[in-house]
Length: 112
Image 1 (tube, rainbow, N blue to C red):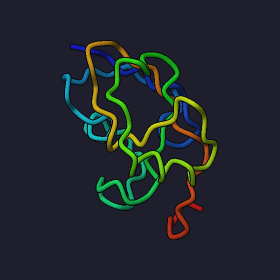
Image 2 (image 1 turned 180 degrees about the vertical axis):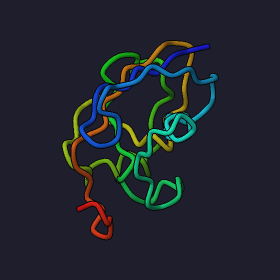
Image 3 (image 1 turned 120 degrees about the horizontal axis):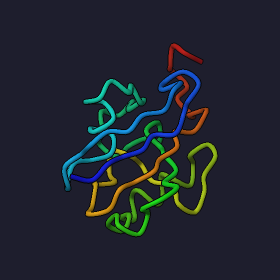
């Protein structure tokens, strides 16, 4: 089963984590199931950017982003060439290394 290595994030995962996730599961669901409480303000419906992650390794194993995701990513904080919405990125055959950005553009988050 592929692994997702989550790089340390000051509030969500200070120590970092290594979790297993079955092929086809969204990165967001895998993180949530392992108590890494990534924001997902739109309830994983591809309508916001709060679950934005940067895929540091394994990016090419993911399916290509659809146009709607690409359009939303243009508004994400800290956008990089390997950015994805974790609710849309499905685990493939390869291990992933992901970084959760320090900030989101969630204007209603109680943590900001």
